Image (cartoon, rainbow, N blue to C red; front, side, top):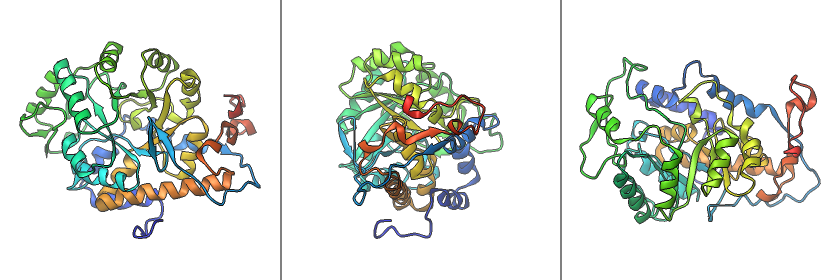
Length: 377
């Protein structure tokens, strides 16, 4: 770990335990929420264990280069921060701290429309940071264009559209004992709209009246034609959707099942990644989130075709533990673990990480599923 970031917490999961001690019950349940039985959430974690690494030995890996170019921007390592809502529940500095942690590590951050600080405030705090903006679909396209213009003026370098949320659970029936929470949504309102309380009728009515659900391919095409920024589609799990995205000229396809928060029974993202990579055929960049807890997980995702991975809950755990420094610590641990994993796999640079590095456990007859080496993808 880099000088100044030494800690008794040496694994990402250590931060989860510390976060549980510091977060309120409301915040812990909000950030940890998983749909129904939590099958998708758990499978995201378990799926990485089903892939085995086949190292290439006797290579000079004394120096490792973890840098990567994502949408034309150089990052020091291919691990960025996924959009997550209401970060003030984790720390008073909220998204400002997260952005500072990302900037300190020269990696990217996606700012959520459900952030508690405005995209301008975050940009001012990290003028040299790599920032993307997660844009909602609005019923009023004037508001959509207004938000696109705000993001571009503030120096955000890509727009992320979440496509796997055809409806919002505005009702609080899932959390009946949790009180409303004071919060701002400055990226979901026109400037000057009042601060509301999460869970109140007023905020729910505003969102129902403002946010367009479900979004459609027509909305994606409209955004693509009304911004100069690269467009990323987050929430892709099917080959059909990946092909349609490429046909519409999107710049990146982001494989995600929303961390198991939206729908249970979905496949683990790492399991569908090879199919999506094949469908895209190099015509767009491919990213992935869901279940990444170690540098070895990152290595496997890169071997299966992801250009970059994103992490959500681990960042919130770091934020809750120690603000910007906690976020930086989590990122540093994963970067260091990735570097060590690369060395042990025989990879001196990111481009050395190839599909032949990984096989599914079924290749060894561990499961009844037909064995298919990943090098066949």
